[in-house]
Image (cartoon, rainbow, N blue to C red; front, side, top):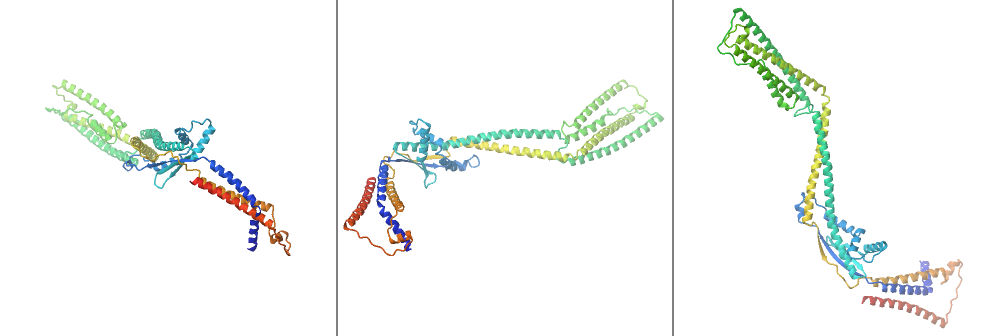
Length: 518
């Protein structure tokens, strides 16, 4: 510890020996620095306060109906981007600062200068902003603050409208795209249904349809068997009647004959029943319905021809009683029933052939049906998803339209200038007292540092201990120097002059501080 203290005292003695270096440097730096500070131009500050009201009464009423942007986030973003180059150029044009700018370099310098001058600070209250500018001309400072307020308000409102227009254009573009996709999906679904209409389920599964076709085929075969039995019985009755008439030569001649009938009535009735059954499950354009109607038309034409022939024959022979077997009313009725039985058999044969073909076709396609059903499900899913997105975009467009109408009729953000920028004649800077104090402290610090550096470059032994450390030899003794009165007086004068210069430097500093303060 003793060695550290001796070393410190040695440094202080070395600085004291080179004190005139420190004093000279301190005086030079203080005079130069104080002169520069004195000649610095005054800075005038203009301030404007702006309050942004984002709490609109329409916002809770329009929740769910219109698209509501985050206004507070938009304002914060605008504050952060207010001092970008395009906005600063607008401020320069509004404040007429570009009248004397003749080059790009000058414009760039002016932009950088404004970016450093304009200060935007949010005060304690929410959405209350303080915009201030320091400049050597108070009028220019006021114009810059006013231009900044104008650009801030215009950009915030314009940004909202630009975002609304951009959103509307994007939604319209998406609607057109999804409309094309929706039309394409509808076309693919329609073509698929038209191509595979026979295998698509219509209220029931394909396997149920195939089971129903098998049931219809078996039912038709059973009806055919019954029709053949009926036909056989009629044939036997006709044969028996023919034998009786030939044996007894009986020719009945009733006074009133039976109603006019034809051999096609039973077939027509059965075919009409089939058509009615077809129309329950199919449309008018189904192939079975079309072919059945065509056959019905031909049968009705033949029946009309047969009735007309019968009426002509009856008219020609109405006064003649024929003894032929064919003119027997019972025989004629049996013949008619026989014709109807034949028609039923033929109809059932046609129906069975149709049912067999249909059933065989369904059996061949039974393994293809799951693939078709899967494709139909996929097409319906794609169509549903596309339609759902299309409807969502339509709703979004309506919401955007409502939002645009609200923005055009009312202001979602209201700007209130709490304090207009003014031209203040009292300067706010530079802080000459602070700068002058810093110059004094820095000058003394630099001077002491230079004195210490010189003492180290040109060392002097100030004690016996320093000699012992430097030479590593033991010191046996020392002889003290005795100063003469003239030397003592000279040292005192030098010390007095040093402290006098230091006091003078401090006095000049105090005078400057008093001058700046008052």
